[in-house]
Amino acid sequence: MTKRYAMGSYLAGAATARAGDEMSGPALLLAGSALAGSASEASALLAGITVSAAIGGPPLGALLDRAARPGRLLAGVVSLYAAGLAALLLGLGRLPFAVSVLTAVLTGLLGPALSGGWSAQLPRAVSGDRLPLANALDAMTFSAAGLAGPALAGGVAEALGASTAVAVSAALIASAAPAAWRLPARPVPARPLPAPGARTAPVTGSRTVSVTGVLAAGIRDILGSPSLARATLTSVVSCVAQGMFAACVPLLGAQVLGGPGRGAVLLSCTAVAALVTSAVLARFPHSLAPETFLRAGSLVQASALALAATGEPAALVTAALVAGIAEGPQLTALFEVRRRESPEHLRGRIFTTGASLKITGFALGAAAAGPLTSWSLPGTLCVAAGTAALGALALGVPTTSAEPR
Image (tube, rainbow, N blue to C red; front, side):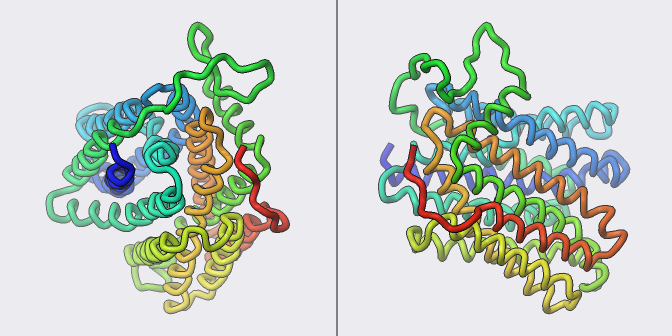
């Protein structure tokens, strides 16, 4: 497979899978309300499939790190994720709701394959001078999916029904499996047993490695590189702030834009701005050090959230756009730091652990915003702004980029 074909195949598969994933959340909410009979049960499904992703990431990454053909394992996991969505759809309204929640939880364990698990394979698909550009384009697929997924879910649900929207999201995810299957194999055979004390992925076989043990190992791998640890902490803190903002969106729509549903426009504005900014950055992949983009992204997001707290419609839309301008380059920079600081034999676990930590941060932010909004919506946005600013502090004083290990 040529490098050009590899990058095109990789990006097409990643974009398709991630669009299906972003579509599945809103589609599940709509289908859950229609088939399960209540909005609270629909929310339980979404919570199940989201929270379990934070648990499934590190073990999945460890398996990818040990696989001789990680692309084939990734293809299998992507297919299973799509099958889980289909099973969830078939069971809604027919099986006890507890079974549907369990299906959602089990399916969600595989979710990090679509984010960190896929991105960890990029250095094998693209190498040399084209890798920074490919890294920026990979980050763009998240922004594009965040824009297209919810829009597809709403459009398909409106035209063909909520159940069809879930089915289409599963089909999109499954259609990405061939691109994953064709990803290059490892360039070297399985590595030998490491020396005592070396940082390695857990050895499987007769010995059972617990999920908590794998998660702890993934976190230790991240902490083993100061640059990676700081970048990860900044990204997680930023996700906490983003989760708080997302939880405020319906109330902002109701109080400022004239209806709760109009709050979704804010998320679309953020996604568009992130996509456009990432596209511009892709043309200049070496313009600034990634740590600079990470720090600036946190500060710009903090400014955007503070602007949103003013409660003016024009200021609110502007804030959503500014937040997207920060989010796109920040994600690209995070991928660059992960790629630079991750050893080949630990890359999958580091990427999926990082993705799991970000998911957890977003969920914690959304959960914290719930009681805060009952106190004050502008106050909640100010707290979110302060949280985003803390992400910049996590990077410390600017330093030169670390050498690859």
